[in-house]
Amino acid sequence: MEKKYFAHPNALVESDDIGEKTRIWAFAHVLKNVIIGEDCNLCDYVFVESGVKIGNRVTIKNGISLWEGLVVEDDVFLGPNAVFTNDMFPRSKRHSGNFLSTLLKQGASVGANATILCGITLGRYCLIGAGSVVTKSVPDYALVTGNPAKFRYWVSKTAEKLNFDSGNTASDSEGNNYSFTPDDKLGTVKEM
Image (cartoon, rainbow, N blue to C red; front, side):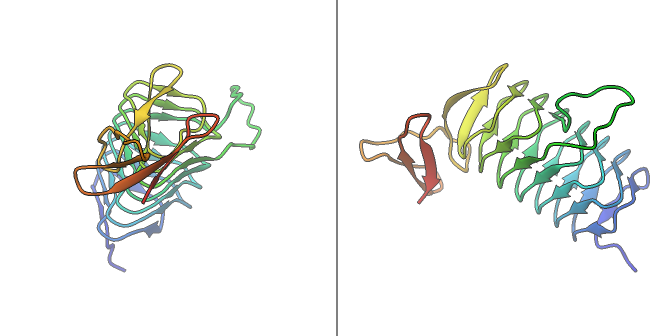
């Protein structure tokens, strides 16, 4: 059966569940029981452990390891050398097998060298600043930076800062509209 995806001759691909037009580059290693959607790009030196699920149109830049329990939805961007975990209390030669799940929702972007602790959710179209250490879930459309990562402001699908008017609405340069609902914490942003 002819492959409908591209794998570089120096990539090791053990999974049979890879979508059309996906590209897997040199020295990447994809284990068995990995699901990768269509039109993804896995750059050099990416490692994907069994049990990982990756949606469509996902970009995974160089030097990233994705561990069991990670679910990556469509249109996610993972910057170079981003770090993911799946065990809150790791010890050498002691594997509990109770790995925590981490969810990256549609359109989330993780900057270069950011560290994402396990058991959290990165919201739709959120932005994680380069080098940030994310220790708790990030809301949809939030930009967070620092160590530990803290909320800075709201961003659009196009990564522009959202400036809400007196009616708690905002637009981006592509005409997408957003509403802000205040609450006891940060509030929530939704696309209208």
